[in-house]
Length: 265
Image (cartoon, rainbow, N blue to C red; front, side):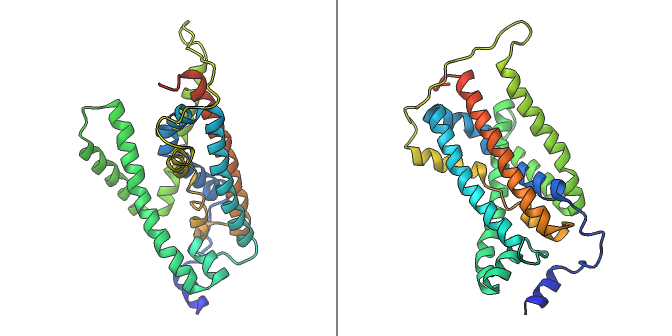
């Protein structure tokens, strides 16, 4: 039964051209770009303003511990089975059976679909903060159309689109870093960080619940299993490397937010 399912999911497994992505472009890059999503830009400063620097670090650490445990579990399973096409469905079904795999991955598929809408709305919110005169509905439909077009062309085209996105994210992070240094002879304001915030917008766990989606997306690379050159090697290395790099970035951004603005800002 399982062989028939995997054969249907992997129609071109014998074609060497299909399985072409390595650890960096097949697992690390999609996982990192998914983790460094809209919440990083829209809510990291809000978390620091509510929880303070130490509180924000505690939230980031706890969230990343959960993500790291998920990544370690996936890595352990991926190194002990033959990973085919299907991503998490392939891994869960081979470990726990087709019934469990199907029951888990149907809601997982729906969650992935809903997350697309989440990211589009978040992008529209950020866009309107820069261009407030642009209608929100028009921005939403334009971004949705672009996403559909990229997904419709091919997997290879979607993979190539990661590089300009990586450039944009990297450039934005460097521009954030420049806020700590003098620019055009004018030094930016640097504040003494507030270590423990007053939590004006909610309790610790409420702030944590808002932030936690920022570290999800650890399965983005796993879902590329059908196009990976060596899934057993690519998935563990790429996934855990992306989790580690994103953790460092979030901790650094929290410190940056604590020293360049007051909690009220």
